[in-house]
Length: 269
Image (cartoon, rainbow, N blue to C red; front, side, top):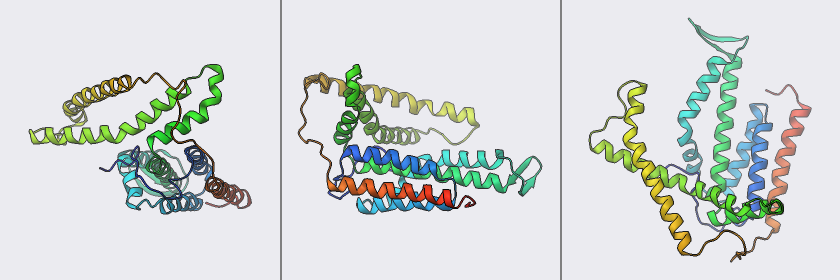
């Protein structure tokens, strides 16, 4: 299966052993890092950061490319949209109403790289963090909001379940599509409207399967006397370690380098 977002690969690497709260904060810092980059050259720093995390987490490089595969259509769409819509002064190609400028090409590459890095970083967090740990981390981070009766545990549980079922639903959709193809269904021919109608035999069984899984999950939780997070205890208590400190320092160093380089070299492209 080529969906990495929501999957978890058990392991005992230094990345796996990090506190889930640390990983969430590092993920937020990584997103900030990607959005702070205003130069094509500086994109090498977030790329080195995520590749270093993959290496330390003992995650094969193939998962980097698997993380990109689900958004390939979106990548192509965003690339072409920015390529042809972004105005510019330096014309690289012109044919009738189609005009490609240097500024448009730069913007298209810029947005595409940003999407790739964001998707890879999000996949890396779920690949090295179990759903239970992620739920505990989110709940602990949101626990101060319980003072205003904010449902921290319930929100964390819903977000984690949603992430967990992304690969499951994608796998289910792939099975339904193959079954329909075996029955002679055609999803490729015809115009856009015809292709959209052809997707109905996939979407309806997928929705039915999703509702059935949700009902089974609710029954399983009720049979185990689940009544929310009030009074629940934890088998594994979350604790920050020296590894969390080192991870935070390395991330802060990457952020600082990006900020300083762009401040000291404003003409960097």
